Length: 473
Length: 159
Image 1 (spheres, helix red, strand yellow):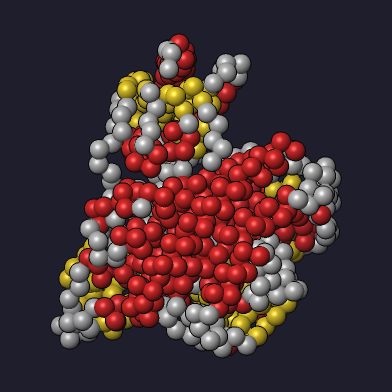
Image 2 (cartoon, rainbow over the protein chains, first blue to last red):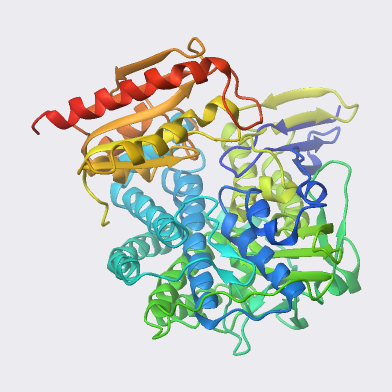
């Protein structure tokens, strides 16, 4: 008799989701789905609002990556205004986005995944958390807390709030950087370097011991997409999108925010509120692709900063072409962090960084605008239409988690098929299935633009549809 | 990390879009003005208490946690001593309560404040809207008095 396993809620994620694993009559995995079970609808209720309110409204989608929404939204608004923002404003926004990337990646790596990586995927779940990490390796635990605070504090210094800062507006930012704040951030840099080096050194020592997981954690060929500069270095805030195939060949290049919808489509599946993005010329699901740290590093030829470039070289040695296993998102995330610290330091030494000209102004000069940026977990696209009074008539957001959705589902299926045999599974096996999703660091609140509850759940269902077992946390 | 030291750290928690849950940020905002000229008072308000706040706690001599309580009578104001938890919950990544934050400070940095107090205000409603229920509105003056008394008491003690 076939069965279904449900993991509900899936834990240590940003948002609420569940996993269902369908077993055949022999108890082997026939299929598996990752469901995002919350719904919100920011696109709909923004209709009728003045376009210049959009950055602040859209930032409310998420408490983890509000800065990415602020930036993508402001850029879409600037397309409507047809303005180019001042150099200093662009640099300050870049720093804000990098600070957010550092704090978000620190949360993902240290708070959500390091308990598995340090204590083991089969360790006692009662102590598989931050406390357990502190007991086993306190310097790693402190490095994580330090890096999270580093990013959060920069956001607080720039935006005057750690979460949902209103500093980024259409046309630039509301106020320039004060000298004292610049000096305070510079003063935090050495400790941030120390902390990321602790994490990188430790991760590189333990990564090989996860070879069995590396083999089956969403380890398959796919397309990859991310922002890139003209010199082929990684980019988080500006640049244009590049799409590569599983062998590293360029599929599409120089995709601007305006061109995004010509290239990327969104499909809908009945089991999830999150859409499934795909590369239009290949159709759905063949055109599915991955975004985020793994994709960015697969695409970039350099990080544009010295320490991160050393790490990128090592990262690229993991495979002949693009690195396919999603387990390596963890390493890519740490490389993003060291790049972020280096780049923030570089930006702060820009001779114009204290310039007071940080805002351009204009009214409605176009009735449609798009903006894109890299959120910590991947590419984020905002697209708005307005009437002649600047009121929003239509909005669409394409979120990183939606762009990774097919890969997450295939990854869950791959791991479930590998680990679950004859209908038998242990807590450690279910934790591995969840851990596949965690590698992507999905933000389910963002993906559905939804009202936040945190947990995720797992169910075991028979071929006749009978619920046989459930893991609810 | 260059965390500013404080003789009295006020950590408020809550969401102003969830009705009475916003009492923490409201009192934090009031405290910003009330204690603006008193050195050594540091005030932080956030939607959730997250692990990195342990760094703020270890840099503080005393801490006042402010939060609404859904398991208390609506409008009930209490200021009670709070100590570090002995056992941690299984899920503790995004939000920690005062006892867990103190425990995290102890485990990570081997330090806890000399004294910690939880100022709790019973919530009447935490629906999705701004503003407060009648019970909370009536309790605000008492909550402010309790906060002021507690701050002054903590500051009056020698380390």
